Amino acid sequence: MKTMKAWRWYDFGDMRLDEIPVPELKPGWVIAKTKVVQPSVTEAIRALGLPTLGVKTIRKLIAERAPIQLFGHEFCAEVVEVGDGVKGLKAGDRVAAGSYVPCHECPLCLTGQPHRCRRGPVIGRHLPGAFAEYLALPAEILVKVPQGVDDHEGAIIQPLSSAVTAVATAKIEMGDTVAIFGQGVMGLYCAQVAKVSGARRVIGVDVREETLSIAKKLGVDVTINAKNDDPVSSILDITNGSGVEVAFECAGGGPEQGLAGSSTLIQTIEVMRDFGKIVQVALFGQPVELDTDVFRQKSLAYLFPEAPGRLAYTVDLLASKRVSVKPTITHLLEGLEKIPEAFEITSNKASYQAINPAQVVISR
Ligand SMILES: [Zn+2]
Image 1 (cartoon, rainbow, N blue to C red):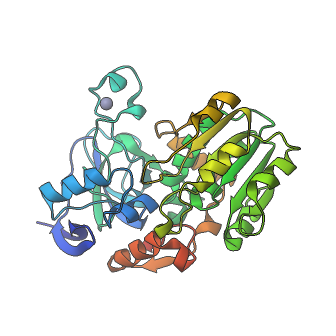
Image 2 (cartoon, rainbow, N blue to C red):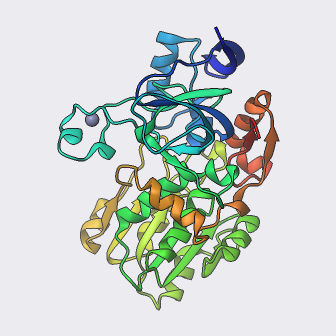
């Protein structure tokens, strides 16, 4: 039996590089060789068992199935074998994937909305991800990475598609002014996608000068360093006191990960124009106290990113250079054995001055 190296979790914070069988090819699936992979920010938090969305599922999976392959849905891989019935993919094609696999049985799947399915398996939880030499994936969730989009950009297709979804949720109207709290990767992606989607101007807020200067290069019109300037009064000044039509909260989360707690959400609410729309992109990891009367008074909409999807459009944004992700890649590692280091950097991005999660090149 052919074997491969793969990272498996024995417990939170206990990952080991094991030799395990290469996954078997099934009809409708492909086997792919990992080229570049990165832990998502949320995965890096989950891997330590810290509070965030989905950590309960991971706890259950570890309890029931350890040692288990976990995480690894942000990747670029090369198809090595295609199963029966797979159309449009062949050996040698590079692919990225959405993380949710439709079940084809639930009411959403059966009414033509498989991209909204919440019942099917998820890559990196119920299906092994790309922290391994090879992975097996259903072809239906794959997108081809075209020439002109390299492996490093390919590994960012999935998180970029989350930003595309977040911006789509906001239904930006031509000429809207958009504020984005947090200029980490999600903030920088949302900013660029918002510009492509008709925003008149984008205001980016952060406390890190290095990411604000990248934001400027990537087309953010006004940057505010909240360490030096009060973002609320600055944004109200910029908008002649009226506030913004749309805001994305991309800064919140555990202060131990260098994130902003929930104070940026309070600021977001304060800079909204009446009838404005807030999209919560960040995960706070705990309940947040809000004065909902303000939402009532200003008729604000508080939105959450719709179901993921739009992978093909995401690829087009990269291929056509309308969105740029390369300047966010600050840490690059070489070899599968470096995965724990990538998790360490990604879970402590602030102390490593990382913007994107650390990327790992597995094969060339
Ligand atoms: Zn379903």
